[in-house]
Amino acid sequence: MEGARRARLLTVLATNQTNWRERNTQLTTPERLDALLHMFNKVAPIARTYGMTLSFTADRRAVVDLPYNPGLDHAQGGVHGGVYATLLDTSGWFTAAAAHET
Image 1 (cartoon, helix red, strand yellow):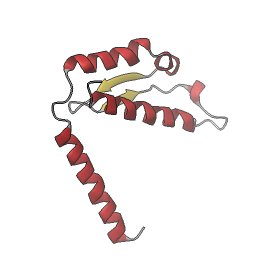
Image 2 (cartoon, one colour; image 1 turned 180 degrees about the horizontal axis):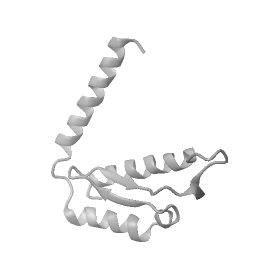
Image 3 (cartoon, one colour; image 1 turned 90 degrees about the horizontal axis):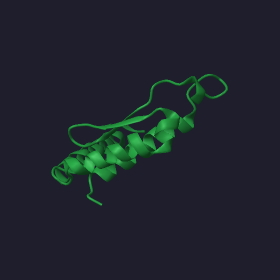
C-alpha cells in the first residue's frame, strides 16, 4: 500500500476510534455490563467449552481471555483459525452490545 494511502487509512481508523469513544461515553449502565458478563461467563455454552472469559475495559470494550488449550489446535500444532475468529466475533459483539441498552 502506498504511503499516503496507508497514512489516510490510519487517520480514518484513529478518527473512528475517537468518535466511538465520544459517542459511547455514557450509554450503558453498570447493570447492563453485569448482565452481559453473566450472559457470557455463566450461561453461554461456548464460553465453557472453549474456556473463555469475558471482561470489559474502563471504556467498555470487551476483552475475551482464552487460556491455551491444545485441544483447539489444528493438525500442525498451531491454534486453529476458527478459534481466532470466535475470539474476534465474541469481543466485537459484546463491545457493540455494551454500547446499547437493548
